[in-house]
Image 1 (tube, rainbow, N blue to C red):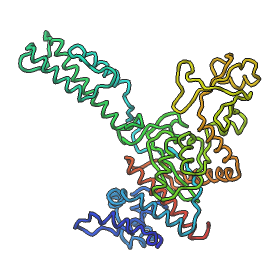
Image 2 (image 1 turned 90 degrees about the vertical axis):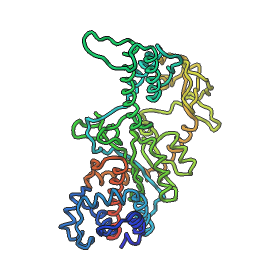
Image 3 (image 1 turned 30 degrees about the vertical axis):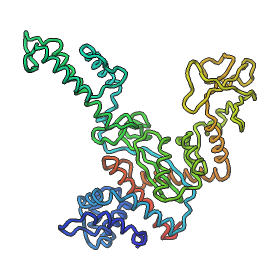
Image 4 (image 1 turned 30 degrees about the horizontal axis):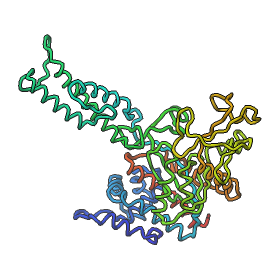
Length: 482
């Protein structure tokens, strides 16, 4: 009844009957989806266990009207029909729960975890940056002996090497030292001319360059590794691994981000990033496009605290409750801020002395968006022991800070928000809700490793588990426990 009220049936109808062909009558797609969804709340997501449950559990026999689909039918239904529409189905059901029970989703919490992929841990491949540069240098040295204008400051593509191979072949045939056809002659006493040896050597370099380019295309722009048994899986350090303890070795994994509010997982985002910093903006943009509204307040841990994320929240007028890297150390008194900014952007040290900007430090320019600020006459400063504690030359009579005014301004706003009564409430809720959602998924629902391969199918699997998590919350709402 609840699924009918949500309007998800129309989405399933578009997914199932859009490209319908004549043949044997299939299972009822609405009842099958309801049974699968209910099955994910009771089982651990294994389709074989679902098949066995459908045969003997009276609850599922009632939902399916005594039909017993096999795991192959369930898999084909999910992969061929539901996977393209699951995001809309997920949003529709979750939004109906929010509206029906008038839940407050103005405060949103996010956190991430590394989920182990279904890949062979020994079949990993890293981006061959150094090997590609070495092959490129050999290609440049070889071609420079026969041609002019060989580019040495960039990587020569395989297509260019192929063109040079044809040119070298024409040059060999033009000289007439091998006749009308180039053949690789082997055996005792057989000697090929140097240009012929270079020709065959260049062919070997071409094969190597093709393999390196293939690896780079699989890796993409934002990662440096993949696994042969699951090309979308990336080498990451897991927090807990049964072979080698905590984060000591890399394993095939996916980065899973959960957006939680009022106990519901509003959005789950699966990516290949090895850290959480760059995932916040895509998560918020996807959340906005899915639900059509912005959260009023946003809370996350220190892994998300950076200038880009702070600016995004400020531009969209979202309350900033994101910790920064040194938040806990400053709270415990382990570190103290070494400088402050006034409203005009001037930097002052602990002694209250105003700094001035310098363009260079040791011959280097500052990073993008940062500036160098210098303070002189630090010899007699009583704060020198704190200020120079982590620099190489603490005996210098000056101090140079590299910092960003906008980042410090937004960090101060986040700090004041976190220490407010609302901030304490947000931090407590984040620990309970978003980290609790991962605890339920991993411990109660036994979802500690992906069962499918490829990013699209893993995303579908995680969304089904997250949707089952929301349905379990719905059962508590229906029973009046919440």
